[in-house]
Length: 305
Image 1 (cartoon, one colour):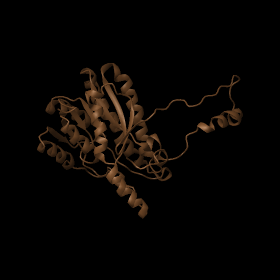
Image 2: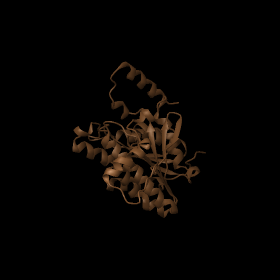
Image 3: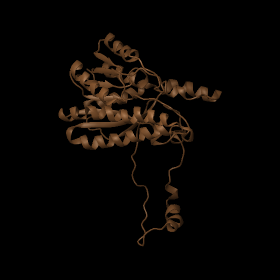
Image 4: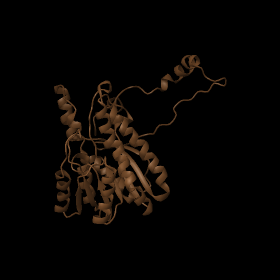
């Protein structure tokens, strides 16, 4: 018996990395799986291939599970709507969507080409919209459904060279929150995961010295895609039916719950504020509560467990 017995799960980006591990684990936990993957490169700038998705589907079937494949792009709404119908027709329904499909086109913002901004937003933010909007009415009608969308510490905390990726991933946070709020009365859940895992996307980050190379080898062993998949599959299960609207991070064998933006300090002035009084009084009083510009390593300074 698995935690997803009787469920049908759509996994985007399921041909490689986190998506692949999610698809394989969902099947081992009893789900019938639609494996979607465009089969393109990390930058999303090639034609793609049906091979990666079908290879994973074949692996599931060889292990005794049920799986079919799809190689359409999550950036096309009609294609995603067809995926939903494919799951319903060929697998008998749809109960959860895990959506780690993604690309990277890193670069300093002052040098970022408009097409690189648009491509990343299209896959990550518009893709998240497409998979949720194309399926939300089905989930509401059947009085149940779960989304596991993917954010990133690049958006939650910040990372130099990833303005496009960070903007998209923080947008996913807002999208998931509203889906959870609006779906609560219909038992439609949405949560997000910020993954730490060695994947082909992370492998594109240049290694500049021996110390960095040793650290990379350590991370390959201790931050794996299959560890992230455990949380993604758990959030699809009925055992997590009261978990919605939350932000998780998975880092090796560590699981974190992130807080969400709330006021940390407030000041009032009965006569109102002016630019001068804000500079003289309000901003200095709040300075101790400012969030610094440190990146993820400042927030997680220890090696993964």
